[in-house]
Image 1 (cartoon, rainbow, N blue to C red):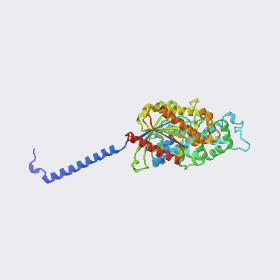
Image 2: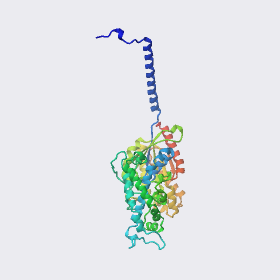
Image 3: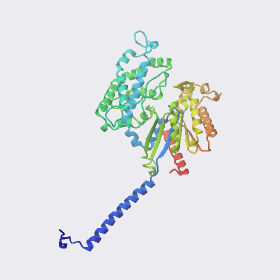
Length: 447
C-alpha cells in the first residue's frame, strides 16, 4: 500500500540547499587532503643509497656506526641494550680464547700451571676453573643474539668468522642486521631470553676480578706473544676495560659500541633516518648496504652497483703485514689493491661517485712505531721513511693512480685518511662525505 503524500517528511527547499552546501564542503576538504598528500609524496625525496665496500675487517661496520651516532644519535643510543649483549659476547669469547691457548701442552707445566717467572702471577689452573662459567655465557649470548625475536621459538642462524686475529682460531661472531637489535626493546622480549641475559650479566659480574687478574698478568701476555697469538684491537680494548664492562649495571658508551665486533655475513641493509644537522635534512632516510668483504662473497656486490648513489670503499692500512685467513699466500695489502682496481674498472658504476677511506691510521702508526717495516712487506715502497706520513702518502698515491687508470670514465675521487674509532675526526670526514654525496646527486638529478 502506497503511503499518502501527507505522511512524507516536510523538507523545505532551503534545507536541501544547506545539505548540498555541507556535502560540497566535505567533498572539497577531502579533495584538498588528497592533494596535500599527493604533493607531500612528490616533495619527499627518495632515500639516499650508499654501498659500503672493502675487504673484511677494513672498518665498514664501524664507519656505519659513526654515521648513525653523528646524524641519528637518539636512535643510536636507543640500541645500547642490544650492543651490551654483543660486547659481553666479545669479552667472553676473548677470555675463553686466551684460556684455550694457555691450555696447550707446550705452555703448561706438569702441575697444570704456566711456566711463569717466580715472581709472576696467578695460578692459571685455578683461574680456568673459576672462569669456566664464561663458556656457558658465550653459548647463551650466541643463542640470544641469533634468534628472530619476533617469534618465541629459537631459530639459530649460521655463525661466521673470528673475533681474534690469529691462525687457527675458530671463535665465531654473529650475523649483523636488525633482528638482534630487538634486544634493545626489553619490554617485548620473551621472558626466557630476558632471564638468560640477566643470568649472563650476573656471571660476568662475578667473574670480573678473575678476568682482570688473568689479563693483567705479564706472564700470560708473554706466553701469548711467544705463541704468535695477536688479539684483535677490539678484544684488547674490552679486556683492558673488563672491570667496567663486566659490571652488572654496565651501560655501553658510544666508544664501546664503536669497538664492538659484529661480523657482517652476506648483505645487510641499514636504514638511518636523519635526526640532526640542517632542518631541511630532518626525516631524510639513508640506506646503507654493508656487504661482507670476504673473497667468497664478492660476487654478491654486483647487483647493488646500479641502484646506489655513492660507493664508500674502505682499506685497512694496518693490515700490510697480514695474510688472508682463507689464503695465507695472499697479503692483505695486495688483496685490497686488487679489489680496488676491480671496483674502479666496473662499467656499471662508471658515473657513480666513489669515496676512498684509508682507514686504521692509528693501528698503522702503532705498528710502524713498534719497528715493523712497511717495505719488508711492500717491496715497491723502497727506502722511504718508515713513518705514518710517508706510508699514508704511498697508499694515497698508489690507489689514486689505479683509480685514474682503470676507471672507464673520468670522475672525481674523494680520498681521506681515517681512524674509524676517533669520533671527533670521523665527524668531520662524514660531514664532508655526506656533502659530496648530496652534490653528486644534485648534479645527476637524483634528488
